[in-house]
Image 1 (tube, one colour):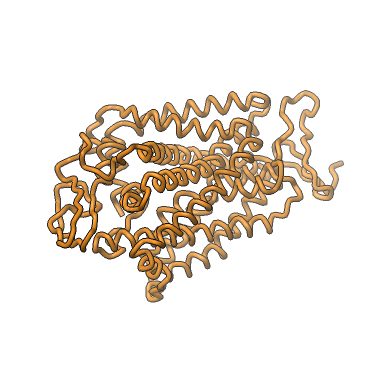
Image 2 (tube, helix red, strand yellow):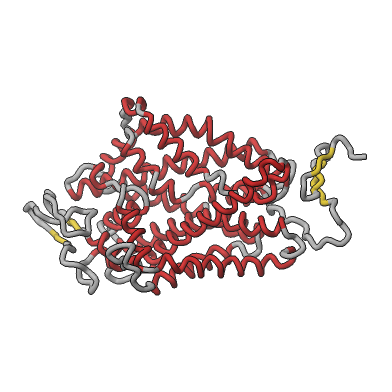
Length: 468
């Protein structure tokens, strides 16, 4: 007779609540399922989830939302909704993963009514992996160009530059009738430039005509951009090599890919604060406009940012937690991870606003005018400021390497959610062949992502990036 202290899920996993153990009871003698890996220590476990939650959205989405929604006032709904919505949801997923010892695809077998959520999570994880793979590929291209003796976004002498490309150095005069900073089209605006300033609108040009080489529209299919194909290959290869041995390899990689970005962010913040105009950006960031709190849209965007930042529903939290020991302290882990994620959003806001302050000061514009949302902030605005810093090559390499590691961290959990999901569902088929499954999934993602390297999809990507 079944003990009252034990419960079983549909996969035949016995959960001994009194002894804090998980053991398989279905066909124990002849099944080929391997003993499930566990994290080597809690530090690796926490770092992996911190890397997953602190994603690129913290760098390019949160700062723009602050500009749009009252500066420091936006922090109020963001912190409040993190506490009331983000924290409980994150904890639920961590409990499900740690309790069941199974990935997102099969963990919901604890409640058959919710089994469909597991399949939906894996589908979302696949979509996010495709999306992040493309973004990381762009970052790799920018990282490569950072090593060029003359960085492509700091000159108009490239063979792919257009007639609208302008790089002007002015001394004791005002330049007018130049192309707007974030436009790569034929339209022009009036831009006042103060003494000894350097304005350039080369970054939109390199982004559209070199990185993407986009066609005139999505209806014009164009050709495959092989430099993007190569970047996509290295993007996915980097991710899959890091998880080739599951949590054993991920646990070692996160020491660099999680700790490194925080150190680099602080370094960039300190350096940017030494430039003129940076304090104006920080003051705007910390100066609240509380009247904006009466607008429902502000609270809606704060809620979206909380969920986008923490990354629940993508299967990563459940999967990573499933490798944790059964008796691990969940409350303490959730408090630490959510706290670090919230702090990282705040830190990224400081870094971005200080950089936007420098750019606005150089161009004679307001911070609202130079701020971009989404990838546009990273690929159009940041290179402008990096080119103005002393040792621009060094700072460009530091910045884009930081973005590369942030993008990798976010992919570890989503890819692991996909592979572990099928491994848990078909243990006899995959079981000892998990590394082979990783190679198959890598090939599948890479081949299907080649569609992102066509000029038509690049055109759509450019339109999406250029839209606030």
